[in-house]
Image (cartoon, rainbow, N blue to C red; front, side, top):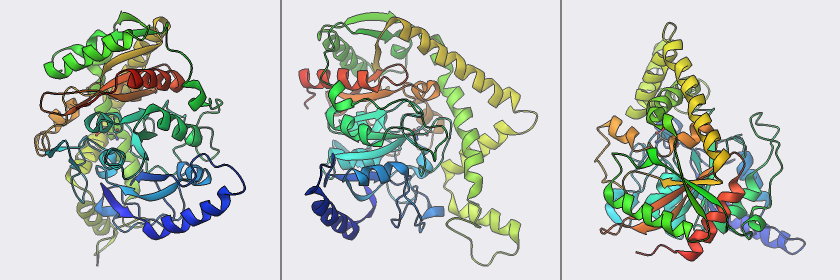
Length: 438
Ligand code: GLN
């Protein structure tokens, strides 16, 4: 699950925390944390799962890493991920695939597959991943842990290597909602170095979790149960929904009519932003540079051809095309308007309900190699997760059950902007009442 481990610096920091702990209380004193390899760590290699950054050592740490370290946490290593977080299986990592111990021939999900593994395997009780379109919820679902995608802007993106800036979020993973609450409390809040970070006060999430869930209204969006959803997954999720209702909550049917455009929408916006963000890897400033270039253009071309993997190149090409003059309005412009419609669907739903329940992924963990040569099939697996990113709302995955083959399935819970408190409370009540067991 790791691309780089940091035993010396971890030991050193643990010693320093030990000394500090004596004169004050640190919320995460000595707690090991795994950090996805697209989050910058000062003096610790940060590859983004890419050859182009294979030897990159950041001169600074992301705000989230600084905040965790101030809270006493110890970064133990950098977790494997799809290259630049583009993918749903970690098969796009330039270094290795992260396997799923529930079935070693299957993926751990992605792009934050390594972070989910670190938590599931007990290597670290807490991990940071990132989300652009489901990269924490989906691996959490495939690995039977809890993964939360916060509201856009809830957590600083400073030092998170940019994929699609209007969608990217740093996102926590842990074994239970209480640990996620603790982690979120430490990393959330305004950061002067990220102008899109929100000034809204940070609730005391661990305290909010204690409040009752009785009386909550839970919506079930019918568009999330259509064709493509594997019957076995559907049955597990339906049981999960009935269980959630039995906590004293009311179920309400809701409709999110623009869901059918979500994949097309996301796979215009995300590559468009990626093609712009990844222009910086040109061999001049960061990472890999091809040896002995003939001239500047040759250096750009060969550096990028050799440094980027196939999926990243595919996204850059799609995105560049979508943004090219003459097509900008037809693709990116239209996609941004559809995004507004998707967000409005959610606004309407949350007028009526406190949270929504749905599957995280249409299938359990799929086989290594099963979708890698069929990008469209891979993209379609993100159908239930990308809308939360497009709308900017918080959503999480909580363990829900197992297939007959022993593969875990997560239940998705979604709420309105800045209602992470509500999601964590519901997930905690749910998980304590119905612990998923194989
Ligand atoms: N699978 C999606 C993609 O490839 C989401 C990735 C993510 O959330 N980082 O873009």
